[in-house]
Length: 121
Image (cartoon, rainbow, N blue to C red; front, side, top):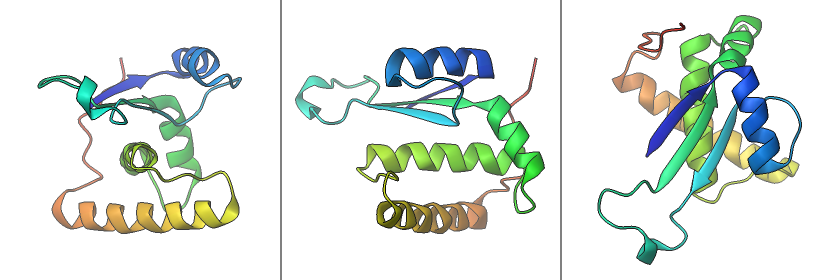
């Protein structure tokens, strides 16, 4: 898995180029796992583009969040997309949110999600 951290400008470019949407977004998932025969040892099977600027803004705005938690959420969200979960309709969105909360709770038991090793330049 490869995680690439982008700012708003670069994320908006990626969102337009790869997804066809305008503006920035929190995470874009590229899963190369559908054809396991085409993946060789050492190849990247999953790539996530994560927008640190969005995480910073949303983390400050939400009462129950902060930058590091948003980053963790976006990574979990991207992995769930790669696993086949979607959030386009309300029923699927509820299912995805349930798994996001469950996985973040499990991660928080083992790791301090408030401790960041991501530094802004």
